[in-house]
Amino acid sequence: MAPPPAEPKSATASACWCRSQLICAEPADIAGIVSTTPPISLDVNGFFDHLIGERGITRADVDSEAARVGVIMDRLVAGRSAGELPFYDLPYDQTAIDGVNELAEDLRERFDTLLVLGIGGSALGTKTVLDAVGRSDDGLRVEVLDNVDPATMSSVLGSIDLARTAVNVISKSGQTAETMSQFLIVRDRLRGELGADAYGSHIIATTDPDSGTLREIADKEGFRTLPVPPGVGGRFSVLSAVGLLPIAAAGIDINELCEGARAMDARTRGRDVWANPAALHATLLHLAATERGRNIHVVMPYCDALLRFGEWYGQLWAESLGKRHDLTGALAEVGQTPVRALGATDQHSQVQLYIEGPHDKVITFIRVARHQPDLTIPPSYQDVDGISYLCGHTLGELLNMEQRATELALAGAGRMTSLIELERVDAGAIGQLFHLFEVQTLVAGGLLGIDPLDQPGVEDGKRLTYAMAGRSGYEELVSEVNAQLAKKREDLVLG
Ligand code: PA5
Image 1 (tube, rainbow, N blue to C red):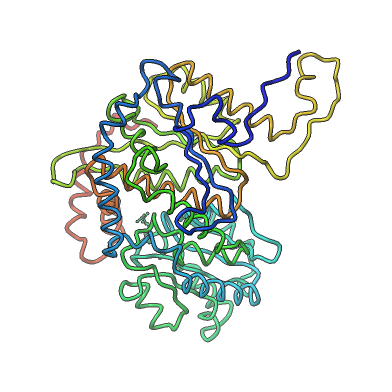
Image 2 (image 1 turned 30 degrees about the vertical axis):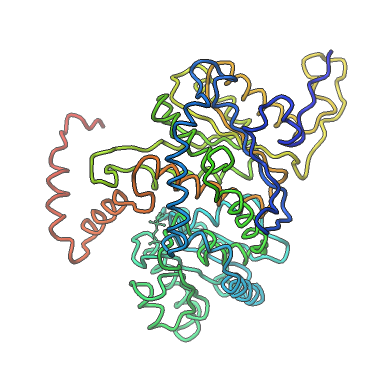
């Protein structure tokens, strides 16, 4: 049996079979930013006609967007200098990072568990890092309640000792129904168990520094507070106190996380679309959606620890790009649908559809060069043809071969893919991923001509919830809700 072709160990090594200009993996020490984490690479060969045939994107297609991308990058740089995009500066705010580390250390001394209350951008980044990196031996157990499902909440509350639990309630607006409901329940229990004088010392509120309901409550009750920096939206806030406190409390190195983001910042500032991984990926995804009908973007890590990253990215891409109106106010109704998948599991579920179904998807693989720990498949049943080929390989190798096989099968079927490779899963790599996708989202928003920083559709849903729950000031919406419900026909409700 011929041995399998050796897998390239890194993007640089893979340049022999890929066109090297389409793999962005510069060292991370440009612009004076030095990162101890190896740079992640982005290989976009799988979008192009030379790999997938006539349905692929051409270099000329990208060149035709290059000037527009340059202008978008100029606008981002100018907006950043003017303080309009403060998320960019979060990983550089060493005072905030040190302050969070100090508080986290204090929490680790006093408590066993940190219970995080929040939803959407106030929870997903934390969950992503916790799942990817895992808490360290001296880190707190961190539970993130990002929903109001009573079964989950009861189960979590039943599994923790409130006397040994700190509670971090996180809401930028300070009035999100889900988060504040969680807060009211947890506060009530804490107060009941610890008494009116003691319970407040268990609560940290992360919210707007100046205004909002949670800010008012925190100030009145004397809770410890951390700021959500003004101008930083929920889905761009993971590297503010929103994500940093719970991540640091779990004993994960937030300096390394921010260092990764800074390293990626150095790689994603330039106006040359061919040299800036965020700009190039955004442009290709944009062309895929608008010129080739690929309006679904699947993010498919071949690594269980990165599954949650797809959830974080899903919110970022969907909430930022899914917009009814463009910046001129014209009807646009745009946005590429993000989908999460997991390799190799979904090779036995979704991939059939990706290879043979409609040409409406781009699949971005994320793979890990060095799986740690890894397991070697033992040399049993050497004489059984159907499985002997597995013997001696590690599971990490098998995962990576399966990723490559799926990528090549998709390319053979004319399907678009891209590939992000991490040397290993650590905080620095996750910081790079966060920043890469954040900038990519801003560039994609610029290409669509929409505002990627607002979320008017989400606000509509919030207002209707307020009306149904009886919040004052929303009475007029109640009749709107009732009129809409009255349109439902009973014969279309079965059972
Ligand atoms: O990205 C966003 O802006 C949203 O997903 C918010 O994070 C989410 O709605 C929670 O909002 P808040 O932090 O105000 O409670």
